[in-house]
Image 1: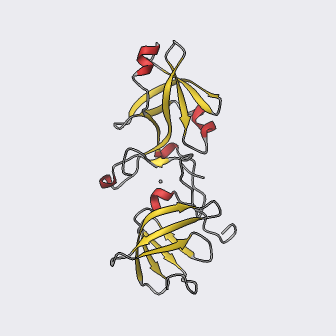
Image 2 (image 1 turned 90 degrees about the horizontal axis):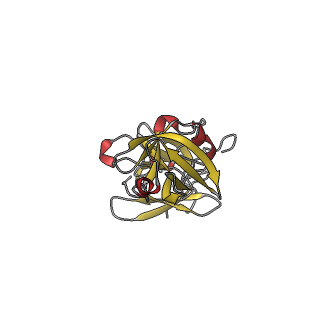
Image 3 (image 1 turned 180 degrees about the vertical axis):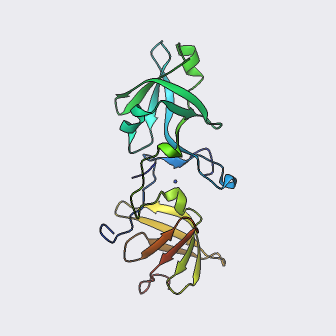
Length: 203
């Protein structure tokens, strides 16, 4: 569940600390890391013109395509150019969009392969205890005793749960399952994750 980025560097039920999943079917951060702040999320990619009246076909890269139909503006390309949405409708597992000012196939062709983005303020609201995975990338991981283990450098999706790859200062890699028995706290403001070390987890 989530609202990260391909071309930009750029993400306990009850007690479980759930994590917004990020994959090819989910939104990803679309900002340069040095900006220090994510303002746009990738939700799709324009694959081709559709018809002769300026419409474009969009490959969906979000778990929530339905809410896009309520947005008046989408942002395209590396520079996040705003485009006013005239029409947006589902089509064969993707979307067909008509943008104001794009009136024929030639104009639509210029939009081919551009990533479609939303402003972070339009993202699906996070519930308590949920996080986007782009917020987890490069996060410092510490034990409950305060020992620093390293930073998260990769996230592996296994189907059952995500696995966080932690790289230590010495270059060692530690694999941490994203399960409630391990992940105790995620402080996105401080950029710190606190984990409970199960027997054999980091030996």
